[in-house]
Length: 265
Image (cartoon, rainbow, N blue to C red; front, side):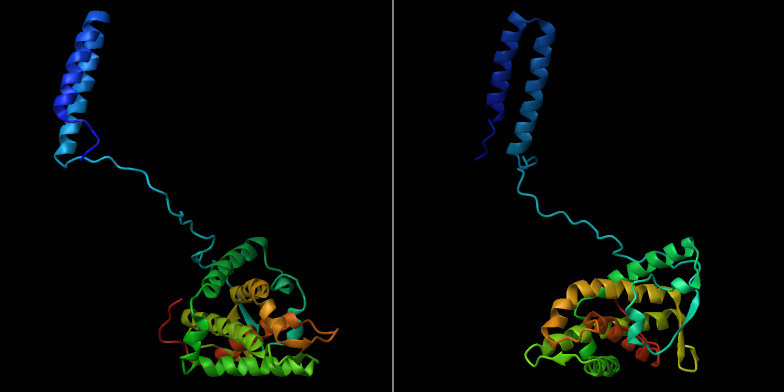
């Protein structure tokens, strides 16, 4: 049964209060009391008929807020073509901004950086990348080759791998490689089959910014997995460089393939 009083009770109360108001306060107050009473009676009647209900406030759930750069910004007006040769690990040792040697204007650099941030966010937040790559007959051989080349580089620089932690190390490298493949496929979807000048691929300047941003983000996430598989680190080699090397190597290898027929990020 409703907790609200029924209409006759409200009307009776309105009548009593109206008489009191007329005797003590005059006509204007009486009219106000009668108006409020009639409105209350109407609402009670609608409630009793099921045409009106009182909403009770419940606990509010978490409020969704979009992340910064959860979608790509418009493509930059000027995204210069640059050459990209087979990766050398020393290229990633420096913390200088991407393409600092090209002397890009501040405006162009800002546009490229903003565009690359959006693409980076979509790549690193893409769900189940490893599972999808493992099920793809074209992608997985590229990932395996990139991981093998990265492991060979690590051993040649004196890195000793821990058998217990090697699966975690390999998975971290594979994830970086898959992200490199995804970035290369994105480039081919926009520009078509890769144009080559000998062993140098023609890519876009924004790709270099994307590689840098993905590397910075994944270092923070994957370094514990990386170090879990390393028993000994040489003093003259930074182990963190294995992640960008795996990514860039897979990116380079995938550019040799045909453009993907379909794509979903």
